View 1 (cartoon, each protein chain N blue to C red):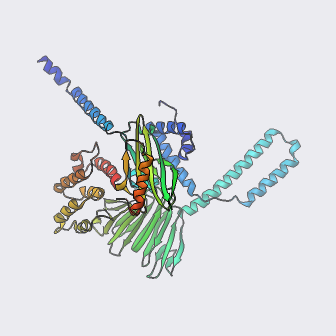
View 2 (view 1 turned 30 degrees about the vertical axis):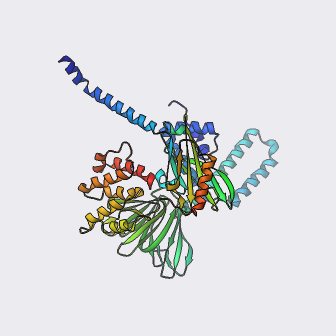
View 3 (view 1 turned 30 degrees about the horizontal axis):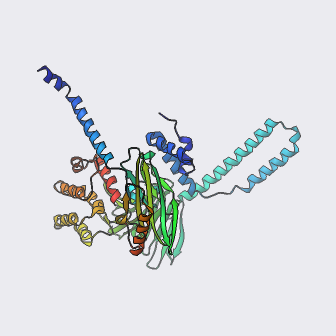
Length: 346
Length: 168
């Protein structure tokens, strides 16, 4: 490497504590050094996790033992050598650190996996043993999900806790509506429905479904991925997506899209209205509706794909390195690059 | 005949040369665009940590984005009084991508003034903030930092519009 690695400065850099010239050196180095970039992400992630950990008080027993050790040390002071004192202090400090760490881990681990109903309006049924939460027409609840966020459970909702562990929080929404606010790295929080699974990519969203699996996903912050048997809809803030049983998630659209476009998306996929619907979608699309068009690329038949791609290209410049031919072949890397560029208009 | 054979032997090298020339031409065109900003919704950064940002932006036409100097201030008009708040701009993992988080008061009319320097080039932008987020269609971009008069004009226009805009 042409310069020294910057591992030791990463925490201070993320906290904005480095002076401007040093901060720039760190940025320059990180831009060229994959190892330091990876370390920076790890440090950033670790610091965010630390921010969320609750403070823990040391058990009283620790202070009693420290005081006793100090008293004893004072009485024997004249007989002890400097080396013995140093080792005793080191031992006491180590013991305190180990105990504090254990207590901290215990609390953090417990809170990371615990589900608590923290607010109840009306009289919802909360069956802990079966992990079911059910609200009637006059009740609602708020459920705290470990230490990563919360879920508001609307009236007439039936919800089950499937998994609750630090690396995975999974709910099953049988019917009704939930509003999730998650502040965790992507792919830690999942909500299963009859029609597929909502995967949190760092977000806030509302999801409703009936018992048959018909419903709507509306995202207010971040991204949500809705998946069913290999079909995926990526829904960013300000957009929605219909969910339907046995056919996978609908095409996402921005909530401020034209009513004609929304209606056409409802009809899209049916044999009678398919072609007409596609014409309406292409005609009504604005620049930010490339969200919808990008999803259509992989949902339309091959003969219509070129029309969709060309409509995208007419609305906004296609980035360098994205080839029309590869996009029409649905090359995954090409589509990813196209999506990342289009996202600047969403 | 011999020359033709040599030419055939060198075809792969010639292809490489052609590719290199094309790449240089594309690079030169990109640089010719000049140093500018693009603004976007937080999702454009592709980082979950940025989801609560007021908006994100990136630099264009800067050969060394990590070496660019970026700063931002929120300029506001609260109950007729001008206010200015220096903002902390958070760099994303991808070089040249930054996030602006709201640290200005909710009350009043506000625009965010972005300033950047890349090598010998400068760029500026004024991004009006509405009740539902930044107002993309009213944002203004300059090949230099925005002047005080331009900031005042944007604030005035925002106040006169009733501050009803939203990100579109």
